[in-house]
Amino acid sequence: MRQVVIEDCSFSLEAGKLTVLIGPSGCGKTILINILAGYENVDAGSVSIDGEPVKGPGWDRLVVFQETALFPWMTTLENVIYGPLVRREKNRKKLTEEALALLKKVGLADFKDKYPTQLSGGMQRRAELVRALINTPKVMIMDEPFRGLDAMTRELMQEYYVRLFEEHRLTNLFVTSELEEAIFLGDRLVILSNRPAKVRKVIEIDLPRPREFHMLASKEYLDYKREALEILHEEAMKAFSSGSKTAVADFIEAYSEREGKSLAQGKEIH
Image (cartoon, rainbow, N blue to C red; front, side, top):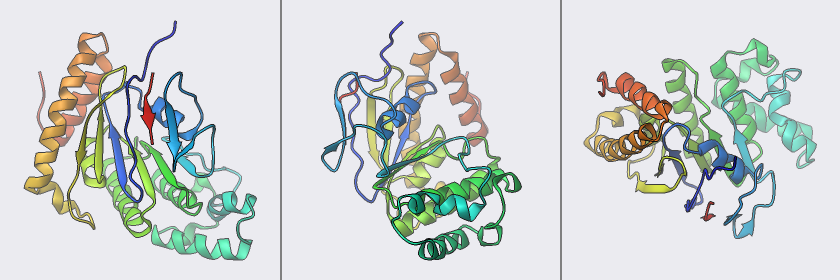
């Protein structure tokens, strides 16, 4: 049976900015990622990058998925340089120099000769960030890349990620279910509705960079969080009333952990 998952969903990614996409569980975030990456086509509407229509996967858009995608038979360094080496953009010596410089920034220089199975989950995530970054895509798409990591590792990964973004300023789309993470990282917050996904609201996050964790206690941060939380709660309750208990359960669990409380076809994407 055919089902409409995304409808009247239009938003844009500003060059050099970090846009965060958030919405209820099961609203269609992963399908949106697949459309942007060129893995799936839309029945109506369009997706474009720099005015050119997206017709399939391309090196101008790279996705870092929830699950590790490192090649298990390659070392950390070999994984990082694989993409540009295959495309013959630079020679191995030049790529190796760039890769080692990036690995040093994320604390993996001493693990360049290790295989993925010899790295922790956080280390694998860092290696994948570097592997995407060295390809210098026009758009980096992050599909809940820190999901499943323990709280301390997740916070560490947020710090590495935001520092790399602030240094390189590649256009980023970061998808997450964690509101605290979304506001801390993003320049712009795109909030999706319950399925079929629409853009409920776009919030411009005017927090200074470089981002520091002490900002999570600022009035500005809390105001953004309160505004977004009201919309997400409303959408989660819609999901519950339509039979999806997962969205509400995920919302309550995430809110309770963070706050120590308990709570009783696409248009255009540029």
